[in-house]
Length: 549
Image 1: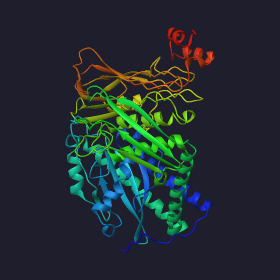
Image 2 (image 1 turned 60 degrees about the vertical axis):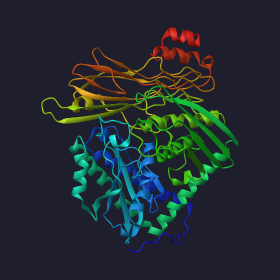
Image 3 (image 1 turned 90 degrees about the vertical axis):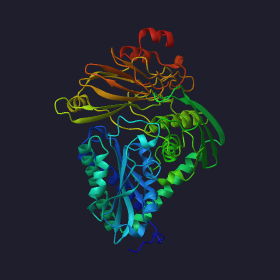
Image 4 (image 1 turned 30 degrees about the horizontal axis):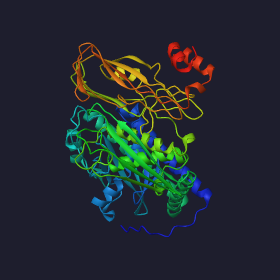
């Protein structure tokens, strides 16, 4: 196979670029729907904890489906890692690579397993179809270092020229607690990538391979131009912001900080934090990059295409060995919680330059409940992962949204009917938390309350943040409500977020609300009255905060 990367690209007009760009977006969205529809586990088929993307032959993001921003952190390093281990000229049509490792696989945490398949047209690789599924299986483990967190998979061939490497698959499944789910979800991932390969090949056949590749390069350049134009519209300057991060896995709080500089059409972001910790809240550099790309894009220009071009004007640095840029063998399972705080840092810094573009702090967490047990009667093992949303920060012109996932996570909740059908759990209460939205001219979104009762003994791991600090308000708005866990009678104390529920015992999870925007005195009286009627705030609290009952 002859591989040529430096091929003269034809000139493409803007209309062709737009048409092909829309086709690329359609391909990744269709891949995502295929993955969700074909999957077996509730975490993917119901909660949609997965992502899909197309990459060019050099590993640059061409297009990512609008699923979960943090998954970009597991994408942007994987092709580079594959090519480092497997020379391009030795890769064949039908090869499929699997990987998840945070240090040797381009990943950000081990449950996110990536499958990457090269797309061949006329005997050469023109792109890659890539997808990621969060396999909710690596539960009931320690998190002092990465060796406790699950099976580490560097980018290796799961399929070789279309033939399944059964010994590799057996090795992976042997290390899983629910192998039947894992096998079905891996097959769904294969189906999604095969669809992406077929659609990309059809696109090249319709428009010509060189035209498609030229359009892809033009889309990267376009995203760069839009990012530079958006940055240039922000005043030049240097802004600093500090925040704290807590977790059930650690004692106390971690102090995090950012120095953000805008200079012309470039932006430099330097992060500072304590040394990496013996807990799963450390972030790899690719997780940091994915978080930065998301957070900057939301403020600079949300319409920028989600491809590698948007990263070109950004310079991102952080001390190696710190909690925001960890090195081997730091544990990383709960890195998403720290990513949420990094978004708060970026938004807090940019709010000093363009406050009208930035929301008050969102709930700043990703509350996670991981249940592990055995089914009554059959004794079959089961694993259930739930991530729970919270309040969305208020905006300069609108209230925040209630009970949603925010920032780098974007999964759905699991419907009660599916939860109670699949697992020996009962959802006793599921509601918005009164008074959790930060008061202001515009009110922050409300947090959620979910109360789980175990119908059979199970292990439970809980994670979250904003227990000690509250999501901050902006421009005079007040903080949102904090998160907390409440345990029912007889539940033994949890250690670092880990414990056991016996049959009949329950746990209550309360997630933070969003911060308010603008001083409470500026809130419309009719809006306050509506908040009282809808149970968002009590009459007594309204009187104390807004002076209106």
